[in-house]
Image (cartoon, rainbow, N blue to C red; front, side, top):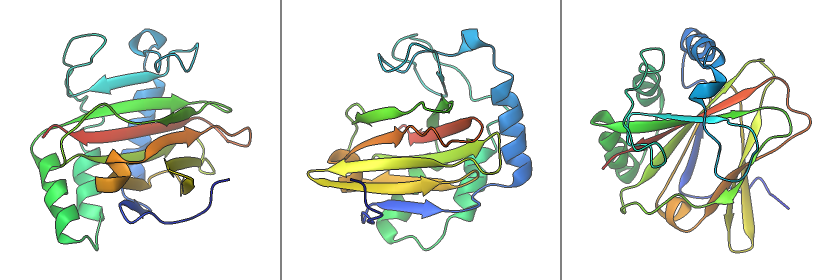
Length: 192
């Protein structure tokens, strides 16, 4: 059972972007044709993922970050606070180059526990939650050994994980039949 335990390498911030940026991003994502989306591995029969700013491992091509999404990370970086020197150092990598992955979650859709493919010791993930309804929320889950940590995310909120949470925890997004609207999870990964 998940507990609201805090892992030392997982951070959470409310209202990390403006409502205007949120609405612009939602408008863009809702307008994407189904043909622009890919499957999330073998976890879904429905295509619900798209990536930008890096080489897509399946498509073998690089896609620029759309203008409708390019202001999100700078806004996030301005809004987060109270970081220790290591967290600040890792965030500096995002000021150079990064890639994003957008996952679309409808009601009762989730993403099982997994680890990202290998990355160096400076790996950090920033996750932004967007929702088509103001009451939308998701549970981001982290599992290490017998402990499971839950981070409840709301529209415009950001979670970040790095270090032990990145390298030694599995992470996933819990499906919910109580979800209102569609949730978009945008993850930012530095390309260090």
